[in-house]
View 1 (cartoon, helix red, strand yellow):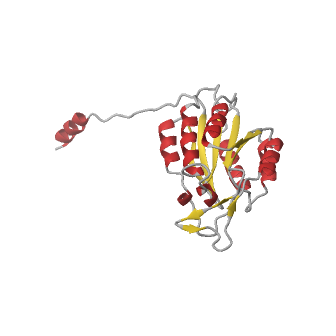
View 2 (tube, rainbow, N blue to C red):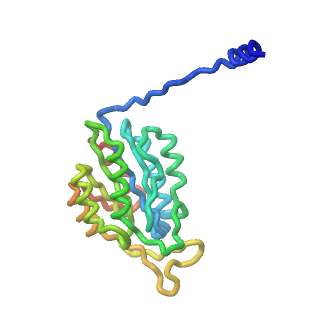
View 3 (cartoon, rainbow, N blue to C red):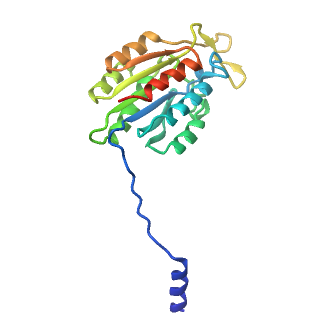
Length: 230
């Protein structure tokens, strides 16, 4: 019986596989911090802001070379969609699942930009590799109304020596938002606004840059510039 068992194991050809990850030291680490609050359902970016963002962010991932990228989402809460990785296939799959339903919006929604920035930079710092720069790319369309003051979060990024690039999505006119067939805010409709002033101030504190995207084509150009960082 022992001899038979040995023959069966030998026929199965068991082996141990060692896997190594090659890291390009000339790349950088990038945290994509995506706003999935209800205001991303506004339709001034057809079919809506979030769908346009997913499409362009996917193109950015295709062109991001040897960079490690992590995806972090937020509304009133924050969530790690993907830690830093060079696996573009996995990143694009996870990006496709980014939606307003990824976080619990029934508690009143909201937008916590400061909390999201702190979460992202803390995750970047945990995976810090000597010689690799780090950057946070914040894509949002609304004012921060929950959590930590975004200006304090921007100072935290500066101390961590990570640049902050913010992309403001939204048209000139505030938009009504519908969620699950009902107007957000009911008889007093919520209007999705874009706070240019705050976003500019945040990026100035963190030695970064602010971009204003007014349509999907403009957003594509912004991501094209970001794909050439460092």
